[in-house]
Length: 174
Image (tube, rainbow, N blue to C red; front, side, top):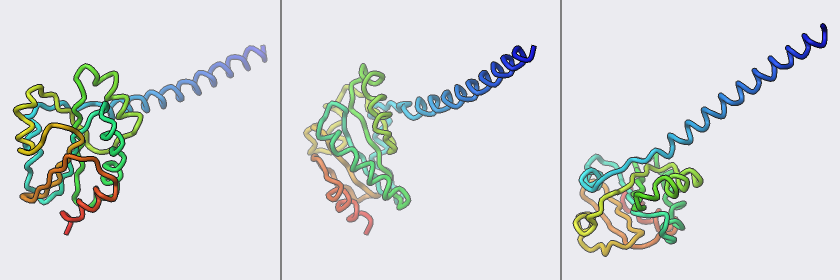
């Protein structure tokens, strides 16, 4: 009789422990999935972000997971975001990844690298129409970055090191 009671108590304790563990893990998975929810824009929706006048410095980087120079510089944008988010600087990473790879490539990429900057996906096939609206001199190659504050604006069709990126940002902070 005593051993039956002990078995039942052990089963109940084991059940409770595993129930709590599974709930905790489920919450983590929910948060991870929320983190990789993608905001998908066409250019009409993206364009207002490129021209805000609200005394914020915007650093907008056009990139893709298939672009090696883009991937190499992403940590620099993340560091810039971490170091300047409290100084009225907003970093927005505009992914140009292919729509059929959002689930298989882009979302896992964002999750693996734990990207904290705002990420939007530009899904607009009429690039010949929107590229010159971003910048009249842009060839369309990436990485490309716009840094602006109100009416002051710079466009860069190049890769950055962190120091180069910070140097350019400081011109807007002064």
